[in-house]
Length: 283
Image (tube, rainbow, N blue to C red):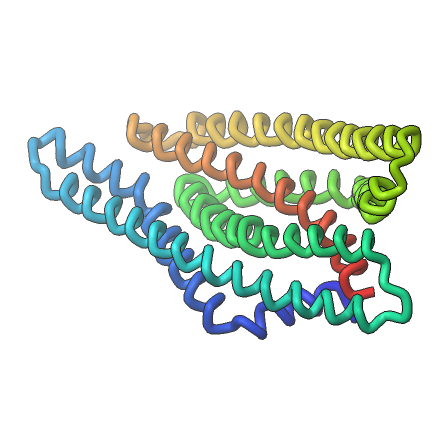
């Protein structure tokens, strides 16, 4: 069975619940991305001692908090049910094999929890990130159309970094999961040298993954820094009248774009680990 089909199966199996969750996420993010715009209008009205837009901003903010609160309550219950259903399937799949490895089953149950956590946290984060990124780009384009090229160049450079390191990250995750599947049997053997080697190996692989992650993020941070400087220089040299509000708005959306761009590699890193885990669960 294909790896991606397993995730698709989860969504199909719990379709109504996911529709509800992502509806709340969309509402929450629409309110969130409107906040900087509303703040700008509010400041302009407050200068004239008019509190109308301050009241509107306050209402929007509290609606966002309420929506986020309700979504989190629903999240917990939905993903607990997802883990329960998939854990039963995993146990049945392992029991149907001619030879059941207890250590392997225990490790894969733990890995399944990582998959569900990925769907709950990382896919939600990815959905939010995409909405926020698209809005930030739209607002930056509104100030200068050339900004769209800057955004695309930044994305392409970041995508290139992870395309180059895909195999390395995937292989490290594969080695880590291989070692993890041996853990219960190694503990049961009560072989101290073997256990020490096992822990050292896990730590070594974690360090290698962390080092690769740090190197990738350092390069991305440099790209994002250049992006922000470029956007601000374009604003200053646009030849149009520049107001403090315009500078504040561009900086807000530029930094928002930068923050969200940082989230994409984080989700991608986690996806690579899940990608390898899914192969094990369905094998």
